[in-house]
Image (cartoon, rainbow, N blue to C red):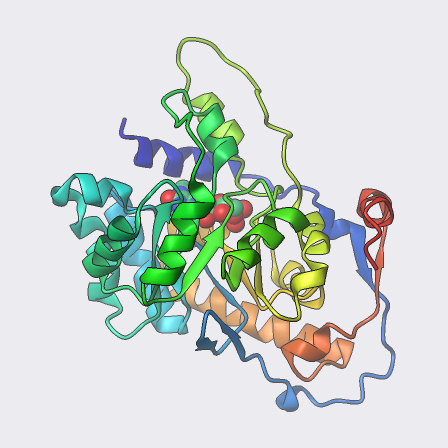
Length: 340
Ligand code: FNR
């Protein structure tokens, strides 16, 4: 089976049950007197220079085969109908093999006016990034930094030098917003600092807790089975703690294991400006008819508004003033790393 199809099928398989997560180690202190009305709550946010009507979006996933084209089509229709920013999967294959480009272009065809981001790895050049953006008439690009995934992948990359330099050239020369993202292993304060130093302003920490690419790559092995590096990485919550110093002057995005509207609000309260979901959206379009999927996304918007009303936060920035309690390992992490 083609690698893109394998990733998609394995991601769907591994997501069957809802797991415990570090989001369960954060509690809001219940606010008895909300003192605001729900119709005064504003869900708007802004990332990478784009205004978004709600603080969540579809993260980069797929493309490159007939099966993934069908998924991109469904995701693009869902994005159009719910006014949601969408990232596509890595266009690396589309640069190598023109015949696969339609599986990405379908997203632009279905959603001509939507905000759509291209996607490539950090091993790629500025020229590659320009070509990838042209293929889908992109509004920006997500560059993924996925050393851990490559290490576990049997046919993966083993040369990782020069990534920051590549990113720096893309940021300086592309002329479109550049978003740097992990793929489910999280980001540390020093990684964010390195990115800031080369001019990156939009960073998706994409932490551990959801789609697990170590597990996915291990299961693709046919000769022997391993659970190599399956518990490696920092959770999304821990990565957001690591990002605290930067949330005021950087568009920090939370992703990795977002299960529901409460996880979204918790991420926003820790300073994220938008929250991205990959596996959750994949399952949504896999399991539901389009009408029901649209209704579900609209329910999330309603639920986020409801929770914000409960917490007395009229907008996304006010959410950062809500009182939260960290417990268990999340609290230990904050203490050990001196994070307030
Ligand atoms: C991904 N992800 C991903 N990320 C990326 O930057 N480029 C890519 O090509 C892909 N491919 C991909 C395929 C599939 C099937 C999935 C489910 C995911 C990673 C994704 O954007 C995200 O960082 C992680 O999946 C963690 O988020 P979730 O899935 O836990 O919400």
